[in-house]
Image 1 (spheres, helix red, strand yellow):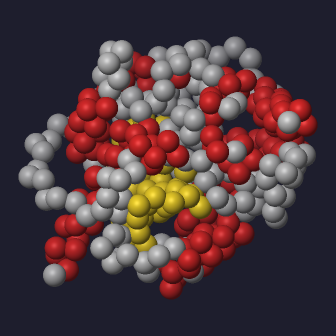
Image 2: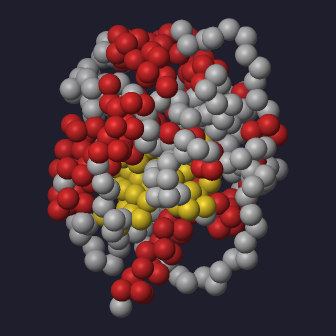
Length: 363
């Protein structure tokens, strides 16, 4: 037990050390009002092409779920967790077409394998929604491996996942898990035909400037994580997340047209930033005042996807509960937990409705 604790401490220390070197000196910190002014990231010139704005529709679902699940001692509003930017338009809700239930598989992110159960995306949310009609599973890919290696792991998992013609298969990519999913779709076209939708949650679609600047340091520190926590894999995790690498991959590969794609992006202020992400968040401020501590919004959107919203959270909080086991790095000034159950339920409703409409059109 003592040995395990020492190893866990070593992991935390490595991450804190890695993040600390990113401090760039004194920087002015953005306020919530500042982040909500100006054009949305998906409208910027360097944003991916073909994005459909579904923010207003998704907000209605998220707020309804949030209000229904709000704790009695929680006085916050749903807008506190879902940015309402100045160019978000109001829409009249359409009639409810009903929704199909889904098979949702969550793909872990970079180094998630190394941090145990608390790093499994949407673990508690899926448990809370168990019995609601949707099926859930988690694909734990190599925490220190590149996209090609992990795409193979996704393929092997899906080969054994039971086919249910009544429940479409939806892949949720968290962080690098999104890039691993995209690689799987290209590498395994036969299996990809089973997939009806891909949801990117803070997905590393376009890589991260942090890797461009500090990739060698990431390699140095994370290559010494104990292998008992995560396998060494092919050690290509960092190289696969460079912005040039990701942009080149996207330019050279065509994603399947039969799949619906969705994007959720995050950025936030200092009080919602985990302690271990603060230095990298400050480093990214030189690129964009809007970032989640690991990614810029323009790098977190899938091309030709439906943009569901901009989450007021850091890169970890949107999907994981690291603070439960790794408070040294994951504690925040504002300890209020991000409403992941409301978020997941809203995503399932949105995707389920869209796929139900698609099924109706096909009949």
